[in-house]
Image 1 (cartoon, rainbow, N blue to C red):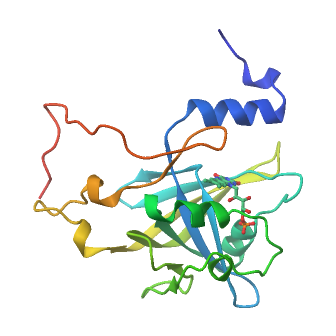
Image 2: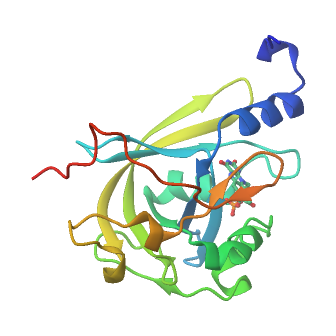
Amino acid sequence: MHIDPQTLSPGRRYFLMISAIVPRPIAWVGTNNEAGGHNLAPFSFFNAFSATPPVVGLGFSPTESKPGKDTLLNIRRTGELTISICDLQHGDQLHESSAELPYGEDEFAATKLTPAFGSVVSAPFVKEAPVSMECRLRQVIEFEESGGAMILADVLMFHIRDTLIDARGAIDPHRLKPLARMGGGRYASLGEIFKLPSYGQLPD
Ligand SMILES: Cc1cc2nc3c(=O)[nH]c(=O)nc-3n(C[C@H](O)[C@H](O)[C@H](O)COP(=O)(O)O)c2cc1C
């Protein structure tokens, strides 16, 4: 089968993208809203794009009910965000934090999560998360066709739970237990983890 994405409706195109590109990591993004309150929402159009400098990217897709995501609005205004990685234990709260609450309503309070604060940006991160990053906006790329956008952000500080670090000083994926996003509202945990022979050396 061959599919030209231009021939699909926006809904079908979205479904194809999120079903084909799996599993996706999920950025649990904390920002400050205009009145100084907190905002939290998950985004799975997310990945790392550079290690030097450490840069991550996020994609924002407008929906009919919410053309401008509060998160993007806050990032544009403050230039700051945090990204937490969610473990399997907090999947329900992550999903709940995607509810389209009116601007200014705090998803930390709504989902009974604890806002924590780092040393570089004033945006909150999820205290219960095993890994969090403090980030600063680097670039916004607009998608004129839809009104959507993607951002690139520099990671300025990592916060990592001590018990995740293995004897080599790396994050042990078995202890991290990250939640991943599939298509059609499905989530996934890590399956089998295996090494190819030429990989696995930790650099100096
Ligand atoms: C697991 C998950 C991943 C999501 N990924 C994205 C995404 O990558 N881009 C996007 O625009 N919305 C995504 N959403 C929807 C947003 O989380 C949702 O629209 C949320 O209400 C946005 O919150 P905000 O308006 O406070 O920013 C995702 C939802 C879930 C549950």
